Image 1: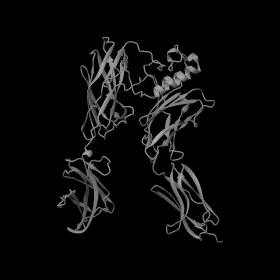
Image 2: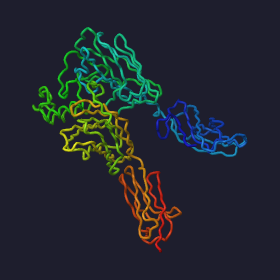
Image 3: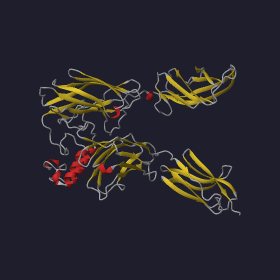
Length: 586
């Protein structure tokens, strides 16, 4: 038996089941060859008469088919079985599991083991809650989208959930019948889900269903709500009212087990309260935005590039820059660019109008293995083809429970780049803006995301690239093929061990150990019986290659005898060893 799972697979230790619930048991393992078969799985009632409740057991009967006239596959064969125990009162139990081996219908061996689990009221399944919104950080009376003839209103539905979701069903309703919902598209973590929708006289109905788990993950208390649905609304021949409300009149959410997840309770705390489930669509001219430099109604990385371009050459500014005074000091300077960058990096631009785009399929993004020491690893990030870029906005997810973001090191990039970072809810957004042209055109942009391990935590997790927005030096959006990039941070490094030189040797010999990431490594010399004679290194090593030498002396300083030895490097569960020969005599 390789695995025994009691109760729901929620990762609790020990397994936890609520009183009154049947207790599922899943057991898996492997047979040494194809002759063995699982003949029976049964529940063994507890017949003891003691004062304390005891768990029923599970018996598995395995036949080795010694009397069968079949040809067996001579390789391991996996097996699994599942069964349910009856509900039990609250108590700490141990599940007896008995494995019986039979041969020619006769029992020849029995094996038994016990597995602890708990039945408690605290183990009852916890149903989370959801909180939808169209503009999580918006003010009560601002416009969420602008609409006009030939200019659809683009909105995004965000969803904060305390549990993972695998399905959504909802209805949208417009307060003005002259407007129509013309497009719905899954966004963010819902992009891999199946979307079905249909227009209605008042708006639209939709359903999002996942056939691969629950992709809409729970959001930390201080984390940003992810987008789940993009919405486009167009006006008809009749001019709409100045403000139209788009209401989410119904939203049903389901978790991975098919249970309904209700809306979170909210409290109206005064006039600043904004009900989360409606958006305001405004008609007429667009209001002036302090950071919307290109006037497309959204503030994104393209605006930052154009602002820097204007600072470098006033002839490229176009209209007056007075209304781009982000910090309200009366002048337009680089401080306003950084002020806008702080605002723009803190928001997702999932509903940005497409505008003009330029093909940039030659651009490549890469995440390298961690460098530096374990408590403060650095994650190298490289953009190949950087000469065509004027700005970039990269969103990366990192294991916030293990690490803090300590900064971004631009030592690998030209000094003409400036950067701004925004960290929230396990995500770090890095904004890069080219402030001037480099003396020597750069082909790549290389920088390092610096992390710091939190006290008492173990290295682990991964960094993943969630999105990348790129803009050319003239502010045009760059359409690049950016793959899903992931880079593990923790765990044992992979090691490589070079040949020793010289071999055989009389005085000393040298060899190298190469790691793909920082880690704890032990390097030593061993005899043919596997006994360690000398420890050359025990502790942390950075990523890269480290050279070691052995002068033929033992741990007590005495010379080793002529013969065959092994030098070995071990990291985690991986161990590599090579042979070396010591010949001191001619």
